[in-house]
Length: 359
Image (cartoon, rainbow, N blue to C red; front, side, top):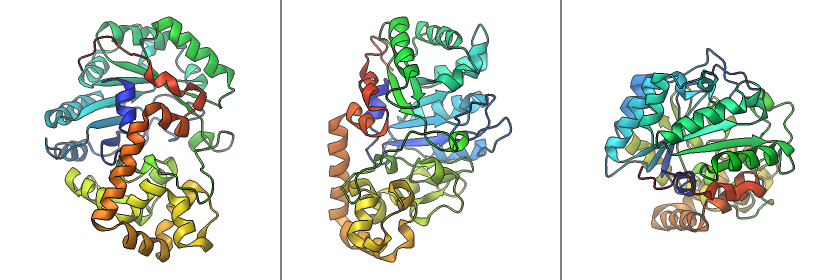
């Protein structure tokens, strides 16, 4: 599975599932959005496995993204989850901060975990390079490519004009002869970067129809809560805003979570027109707090909830949700990353990847 394929599924409701395996991480990167430490929280392995084992061939996400913290501090769990998901036909993607690359060879348990997934993505940026040298990351990626693994880079920088991004993307293209695609993002003011990051999140013009693809895939958070949004403030916020809480892995299975996401009139409208347009349409006096902050407050405004119920319940709302997703998916992964990533580098997601991949 290549990077562009699963990024292209990002706007499709419940086509994917994001799973936070842990908040633990052996690195201390200054920009960490999750503020991970060596002793962070994590969901129970048994609960995660039971949840993923509730996938069936007829009711499953197309792709499961395993992240953290650093998911490879739980390598056996990565392998078990990938096998369980694959049994139902779900492909798995793993995102790592590459702590293990500081050794000359990839440790056996880590290598087995990477071998169990369908795609491996390595985080790399100026902050990671202070913890793990670039040459060590490249060496590990060469080992994985030689083993036939589908790989990519997840890069972050301060913005479109960051000279680091120009340097590292050019270096990767030379080093790997365009065999490794890249997703390029910008450091946001969350987690450890809350006090110093200057990049601004995707913010459409007030009131404009702006479908929110980030509310398409359910997210299993560090405590097992299942959320409707991957925004880091939503992941960290407790209690979770009612309209953004889909359940908990200790209590609910995938079919239940999927049904709640797809049937919610408010989530349908967030995905189809965006929270700014929702507030302007149903509760103009509630406008003002910003795109994501305003979304977190939607369930506090009865007029918004009632308007969404009236206009997005039943077959009409289902059709609106499905057609909005189709239009975004048809636009392709580059268009998506021009909205949510670092626009000048969006086309790097379509580099050809591993030639002849059958995974």
